[in-house]
Amino acid sequence: MSKNAFPHFDDGDVQIRLSRDDKDVYILQSFILGLHSSFFKASLSERWTGNTEVISASSKIKWRYELRFEEKGADGILVRQVGTPHSCTHSHILKTCYMLTVRDAQPGQSSDNMTTTLLYSKLEGPVHQLSRTGLLLNEQRSNAVAAHKQLLGALYHLPPALSTESFAKARPSINALLEISKMYECASIVTTQVEKHLLQFSTEILAACTWDFFPMLKLSTEMRCDWMFKEAMIRLIGHHEMKTTRYRAKFDSLGIRELIDRKHAAFVNTLRDAEYRLFLEVDTDVCKSKADHKYAVLAVAYFRKWLKQQINAGNGSGLDVEYAKLYHLIRYHASDQEDMLQFLTEILSRPGRPLTQDIVHIFESHVQRLFQAARNIVAPLLVSNAKDVWGYRSLFAPLTFTVITDHDLPWKDKSL
Image (cartoon, rainbow, N blue to C red; front, side, top):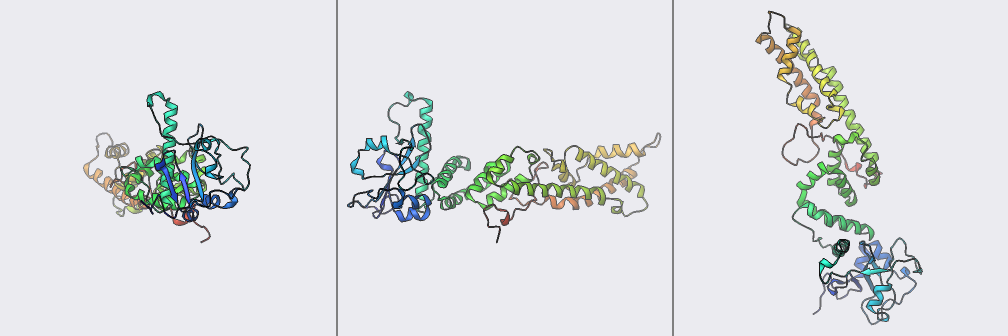
């Protein structure tokens, strides 16, 4: 029965064998493969080898490829079969087929330095007779075959058959698919399909951007996924671990270290500017009443003492683990009631002259006004430019006020 749909087209002129199983033989169209993949565009050219007699004239198939693995390797690559197929047996091909890559192969290249490769064959017989290494290698090769199936489908704009259960379960297959898409130079069409699939996991991905930001930055950079990169960057810049140098080599590998250093420096400077304003602008001018000016001065002294203690403890621009707690405490005026009373007692209390409730009330009202003024200063720091994941913000949640624009995206043309 005639077929004219993926993976078998009546007008297909390229045969691709992904394993020894005949079910893994695809008949595809060279113009589609060459249109979306620079690898196929080059290897389908007769300049790929010096031998133009690839297939017999009576066959519709003009090119044949096989997915080949090194004898002890798990990374496969599609290899164009050179020579007339009927001139060698299948077992002969298994022993003598040579691996070519776009990077290394040149027209008329000698095969002296090429590597003997094998087709993938599904396990047969008792599994327990195989070593753990053998089972792992077989599983890795099976995954490589599956990734190639996904890639070839993507060249025909077919959605990849990835897990719909969770992002965590789909992620290994996504990573494998993206990796081989770079090898065959067709990443743009593959990433478009993957990004559509990932939209169903948006909440899980946002959570991963919060706690697993480097892998998410790597994934978003490889996919050139704007929204994922921005979310991971915003969360990363405000993370307390940014004060360390543990990720610098990784950022260099992605080509984004300069961007991260620049954004993080601006982030820290913003925190310091806010703290400077908290010390200088939150003053007795906030307390309008002159009658109880003494208590207003004491309130300012208490506020500055409290602020200094918080910063010395690593909160605020000190970027300790709970650095953001300072700004959230100001937002909710969550200073320690007992601490306030102790401060006031140490200053005003005398033997036989305990503090009255009126004095405590006046002092607390001035502290309240100071925190209100401080709240206005830190308000811009508490604005979140990241999408909400859980519907609430913890007192310890990192700040996410950093702005990442389209111009900041590494793959955007900076001249526009």
